[in-house]
Image 1: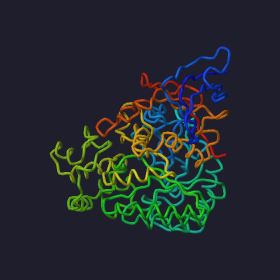
Image 2: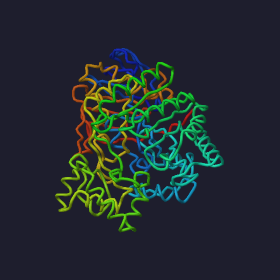
Image 3: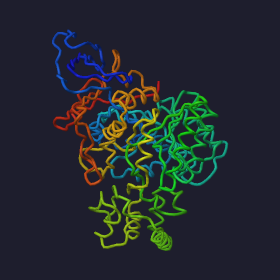
Length: 524
């Protein structure tokens, strides 16, 4: 029987109510007593003095991409060091399961080659078993990715599914949900999800809704066609009754910044009609995705693996793509290379493409094309193009959670450079909302009880008797992100202790992961 008494801390219980001083008794991974200072009596218990510090439920990252990185870096240093105790992976249509065909296995192997992991599982059960063997530091729940699901049925090609194929996909989704996936995600910007029509999505979402699951969507378009893309998502939720989570809500590109009023009204109106809608956002104006999105058609509907093979094998196609990219007028000073295994990218991570090209003695287009030719699947970049004002307005909505949109990272850059959000999202989220004079107890609720409710995390996201002891101990005055694009792996300041299922997972005094006590959580 393990026990620990936390004394003298200021408790934010996740409810949004005012904080209060209290002692917390942790017993066998759960919170067993919450009492005024000095009132807990438990023989032989170890004590930790939290005087001058605050304690809250562990913070929940509702939009993560740690499906394979947790196998390579189960310590999840970037997540645990910023106070995250639970994360939701399998987002944007991309999950690590199911894998039923050689094509899907090879695609995922190529995509995740930098992690040194062989995807030798087949379904959610076998994947979860493998991950549990690695003992992740954080709790994790999973969505089943539509792109992965669809690719198992019809590959990554542009095509409409036949009735038989749709029935096969529905059956496969139901199996993954019954094994414990909490819902489905779509990445309608990416292949093969971008080839799906509304009837296909309605069929899938009916299955999810029938099991009380979540629909998390990376909209078809977050810029020029943002309103139409949001309309589609709302329409699907209204027709099926599924619970809708809008991934990384944004207005991309300056010409679309004025659309936010319309977007917020659309969501408010839908919520007023009884549609269950929430959203998430990382607190930065730079996004991060595949470097290949800089390419024009037809590459915008291809997988990165297919792009790499065409650029390697077809000199005519390579030359045409290079000319198009050279003439695109893109501002390369607002594109930052995050990671790539291409020889041309060596030593350039964290630099803008403009600066990297100058250092390499090449034009930006030439450098980018060389990188994509050699490692399109493993090349990521951060793209500037979002509004600071809109960011704060989005974060200020009571139904918006925090999501890092990042993988679990080790303390170093051995798995590539992170976006700063991989180490600093939650402290930065808090900072921006405190500047808006939103009370800390309301902010903490947005990071804990709100996401726990959305994703049906029983006995998590709150500090109350009987809840799992997922806790963050922090210094309110010292709390801030220290990560930037040149030093993205710098742990946040002010995070003193993190407990996962009652165990000390992170010690901020020495910036070290102590015990990996996370669990794979399944839909109940």
